[in-house]
Length: 323
Ligand code: ADP
Ligand code: MG
View 1 (cartoon, rainbow, N blue to C red):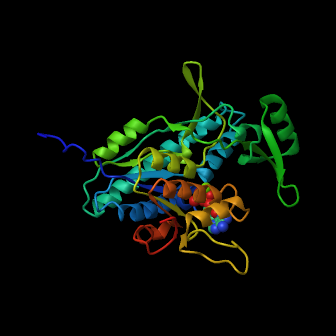
View 2 (cartoon, rainbow, N blue to C red):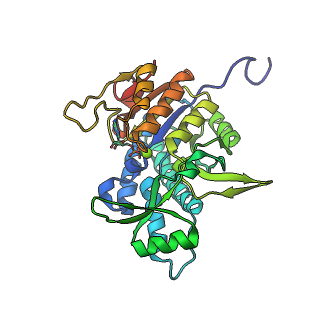
View 3 (cartoon, rainbow, N blue to C red):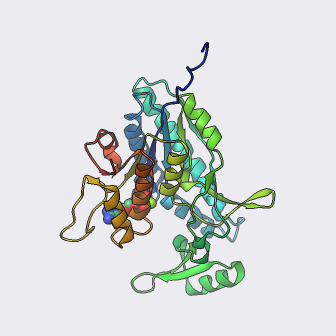
């Protein structure tokens, strides 16, 4: 064949890195921007170590702490400024974190002499209106509320609220965490990856949208970024999914005296863990489920500490599922 790729030459399979929102804003920092920049630059250094081989690279990131701050800020200004909806709060954090990561990654790549462009994409994910998660919202979001505020918001806005804390510390809003069905910007992600661009997409799990007739509508929900990363890994036939977080992998008997950190879980072992109660419901469980989905589809899947990404991809750190 003249010009272009020989017939049958498939594009190289991308590596997907999922960065934890907590890893980008350490829990102790109380949301200070300089802490977020420091953590983002550190994360970017570790991602840049993976970019040298020229392998297509897609970064998905969380936004848990950041979206919490965004909604808290909105609550503090509610008497003076218009309200912020959850989909807008996700979009705002996706934009701000996308900018931070793109800038930090660009700097980290340039410092290594790597001429790879970086682009952060605003990403919407389609969720189903009849997803069972909407019948039992379980993700606390936004500021702590008094019982009186909670009652008003339940009555006037139809919010689901829950009293939380050892002694009732207060009330929180609960939103659903539905399954992502499709990433709407998938063709754009594919095109950018094919040009060698390091892509940041699916931030915060993506902005959840639903189809309403011929239009899309934002939804008051949050999508777990590990689920979105797994969906992208499957859609893009990824070579691997590296889930970088604030612990070194998957622990057995987590937090107990006989805690251990296996370097490998077979598919059957991961299935058994998911069938039990040993994994944190909104934390380690979606990571193991995501890793399992990728392993079943023939990719490598490793859960590791943010600072051990390169070692984990080299098979020297983290917990690898399958293989
Ligand atoms: P991220 O922002 O990276 O998604 P999460 O807080 O959602 O971070 O998930 C990581 C957390 O999962 C760890 O900090 C740990 O407290 C928790 N966790 C729950 N169960 C386990 C387990 N079995 N092994 C390791 N970590 C676990
Ligand atoms: Mg998480």
